[in-house]
Length: 165
Length: 165
DNA sequence: GCTGATTTACTCGGATACACACTGTCCGAGTTTAGTTGG
DNA sequence: CCAACTAAACTCGGACAGTGTGTATCCGAGTAAATCAGC
Image (cartoon, rainbow over all chains, first blue to last red; front, side, top):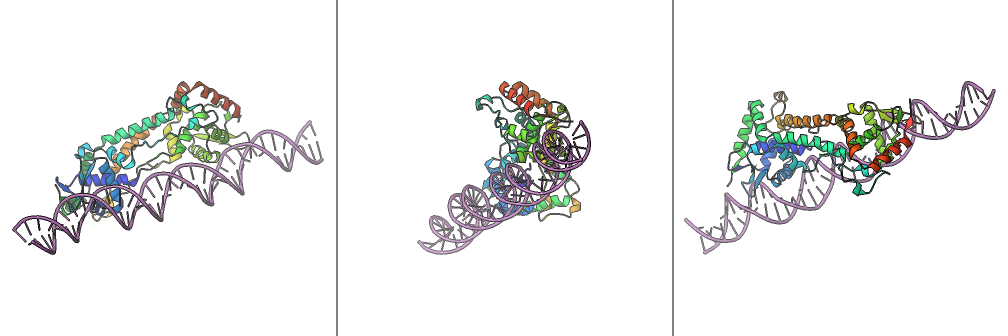
């Protein structure tokens, strides 16, 4: 079981986009350069965030990406689900219906207890992720990160953000 | 993100092994047949459970597997970790250290806030899994499963379990 | 100087390799019981 | 009748393909601002 690296990249990008001025956008190339990621691959994840209505994209020159909501209205769960998809990590293969003692499918109306237990645990995970807001992540970053890194990021944003209706 | 099917197989096998009589074992071939799984592949997962000290194996003829602990002392987390490995699902790639604004590695003594948030959520997931005991799963099965399936499983166990010191 | 065509810079969507983990099979080795053989 | 030997059943451990998912790149298409040409 492994969460894809795209999730980490998406969260970082969302946090950065929270820092640009209102009414401006940041092109994907700037996000990729800032994080040292592949520009073409990062775009795939950004598009997933746009499809989930967490980001907005502006096409054309001086276009780019910006947040579609306030950072306090975006949770890490929103980002994880946008990138990983909505399906739960535990997918019951219904092996209880496979052996020589299998009954007709109509006999299995009650959900598999193992599946139910695993999904309960997964709901706890999602609830914890939903409680982690993007605004909290940013607040934690600003108070614990190296001042030089913060200054560099601010200067980088000021250099690359573009005004946009 | 996807949990391997081996986890589901391992939990089913552990639940079945909880049903054999004390002092007996069940060969892997019987477990595979009962669940309609590949015998050779199932052994891989059973060995992982043995390595985690959740099961015990007895070699030789009339050998097989049995639980190493009481069902109430085995949690679903134990089984998941035995099969999937102990590493967390979210593995921080430290992309904060990769861009043009990266500092020397010594500047990143404080953990990445994003990583910390993801690991907090994962701890919630593990805590929920640790609360789900194998004995609870079995109790839920016995009360909600079709009586015909229960009867078949009991007969199957009585037919295949082998006495063993 | 103003309007319209062209260029440019960016997003969008799909097609295409590549790497790695999960799935599944096979073989040889080790261990213990059951059955067989020889005295 | 008893002891040693052989055969059988099972686990153990590693080596080996097949498959699917995540990673990464590239190309063509669409969009809108900026630039340039022509009147």
